[in-house]
Image 1: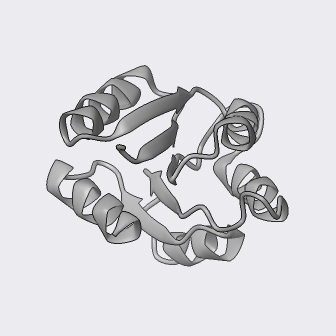
Image 2 (image 1 turned 90 degrees about the vertical axis):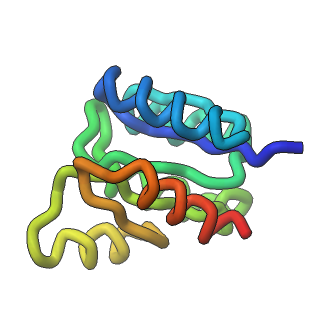
Length: 121
């Protein structure tokens, strides 16, 4: 059975790129266009991993991550921040919110796949 990845990303082009990349690598992909929907989908579908944009509508990725981490049934799901917030300290801020990993945009397909596989081994 393939691993399921929830991509929480508001930019359609990024969703398309990540969907193509991950499905071609053999993963099952689910998409959420905003933080609130992402939290709801995480609770409903219990993915094996979450790719979390930070700059999201309704609730941002930091708050979405905190809400997922506050649910005991979801707490162990790895969350990787995939964000254009790439200034010094932004990775620490993502980790402080509960993200396990961090990838800056624009990302290399090789880098994102390596990071996904690192957390799903």
